[in-house]
Amino acid sequence: MTINTGAPVVVGVDGSAAALDAVRVAAREAAYRQRPLRVVHAFVWALTGVPLAPAPGAPAGAGLRNQAQRYVTEAVAGAAKVAPDVEVTGAVIDGAATPVLVTESQEAVLLVLGHRGLGGFAGLLIGSVTVQVSARAACPVLVVRGEARADGPVVVGVDGSALSTEAVGFAFEEAARRGVPLVAVHAWLYPSPAGPGEILPLVYDLDAYGAEEERTLAESVAGFAERYPEVPVRHRLVRGTPARVLVEESQRAQLVVVGAAGAGALGGLLLGSVSHAVLHHAHCPLAIVRHPRRPARS
Image (cartoon, rainbow, N blue to C red; front, top):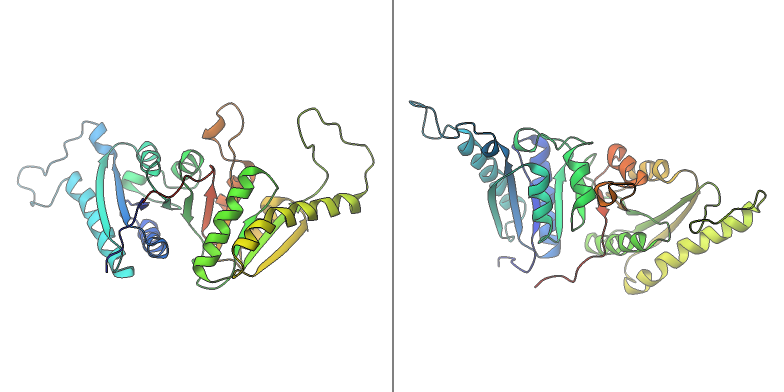
């Protein structure tokens, strides 16, 4: 039976080894979700005016566009080997990597990227296209980096915000699909303002604030724990910076999930500081959730 239900998992490819790793992960994610897989290559050369056809006397398969098509064909074949029951399609799309991928994310249930690349996705180096797309995508983004383990828990960062709630829900779904425990991590150093203009006391009771942070963690997870009773949950309340704590947890995890709110003058074009740091330093794949998820399209 071929799986073909609703919005696809989308993966960006460029012929690099990292992109092919991302394809294999994307194929498994599509199988988990019972979704089709769409393989996309952004063909930026069409925008430069460079001749795309084979040069006179060159072999029939030469030329930049033929090479782009080979990237997609190779990736589609690789995905089919990993997940033979998943419907896999591929496309070469004229345009730069970031706008192509952001457009694809509007109809996707999940967007999968390698952490570095070459060619049409040369920007898939941490700090460029991966960061830009993660900050602008309309669906969760899974960045394949570090070690893709079959064991270990799903780890989620919790801070009590609405976007953190979305990340917790995504993490529970992933843990349930994978049949693994969930570790909910809340890291804090000092009391922080609850809103604009709030003035914190010069002297405060760390034990009392610690108890409040523990309540934040418990309340953020409670509803989802009831919805997913099959998922074992462990709470981790840690004194420390959130980014450092999540990077440390990633050494033992098979997936880390974070919410990422835009900030500053560019708003949604930026990742939050924690998600940005974890994106650069995580030891396992990272899922970044920025928006409330739309109802699944059937």
